[in-house]
Length: 505
Image (cartoon, rainbow, N blue to C red; front, top):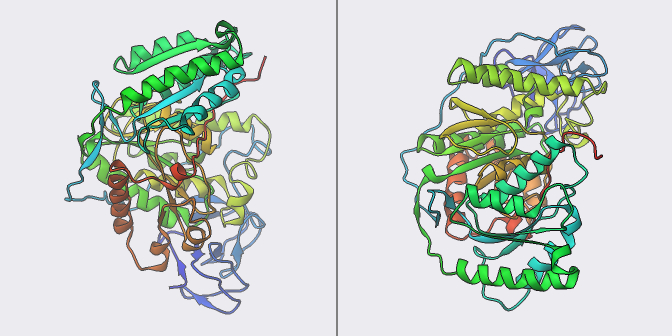
């Protein structure tokens, strides 16, 4: 097979390999060379008519398109998030036609991890050094590295990690609150045994307030704080911090692992550096894993609100009740309204230049592929950015599409394991939460093998089914619980960024 038609309602198909002019694909004579991963029309599309993929609108033809012609940004226009053409959100009513099946598995998956006294389950048992403000970044980094690269006893699962950020001061009140929420949530994550919060002393997000809130949310956790001003400068702060962290690390090493199950998982789902294959291989495979985790009593987070614009009708149709449905629609359309008020074309920001190079032509097309990573289970809740995930099942968290800001928000919400799909390739990872990278195609899996753990390109090649790759993901999660390092962990990726809502003041 040299091309794939997702739905019988679609009027475009995706080339699975380079198609040459004159080739026959899905019964259509190709009129020009079509790059792998790019679309061609399977029927004539008149100017102004919808271009349909995944049984939904991905845009409008900007000129007449003949069957067999390449379809991309040169001859189709996205309808959503278009601040350059719209003054408000377009209300495009669509029915949900896709036939969906919830993936299931009778296999028993036994995890081994760190059971917390509040019932939380950690895949890791790290000591986290985190600054409350960017002025303390270097001190926090120096404390962590002084222990990490010392002869102090440690192991891959119980080590000292740190993050840095550009926030914590000169922020309006709601950004102060959001910054503190992310820092607190990261410290409270079950993958963290103990936390040292380092402040400067005069910032808006105070180290003491952060530490107290972490203790309140996770009373079992070892939490300490100090400020550089009170400690007497950089050198004294590093010395003080090293002593605190060494004591925490020694205690953490005494914690024994215990048995867990898929019910203990709070899975973060993410896609970044997407291509047109992401929605055909990696994301559906992750969706199968997500379905099976929920089937066995676990929790899954779907985020990236930007990348749900144009797919909200599908997600809303799966809401567990009217209240959740309304929250889904209002959250996504509210986000789109913010984008439109920028008066810019969303393309170039999202989808990014790399996404477009990989065959994605509009935010709608990207969104309709992104939504597959959440599987087909009902949506049980909608949460704001970085808020704690409290229920079993699928939760939609309102986050930006930016990879690092999204990942940081999910980790702050309690995500203890993340699967990150990619078509173009990315090294992204969290200091706190193991992040498994899943390639949508074999070429990027091979070219970036030092950064990517699993390959869903086998789905495109026809050697494996989506269910099989979904089960591979679950097997890999089990291996991570038994101490296997993800590529991001091997590379010491400690990406961390906080979604800022307003300007610096």
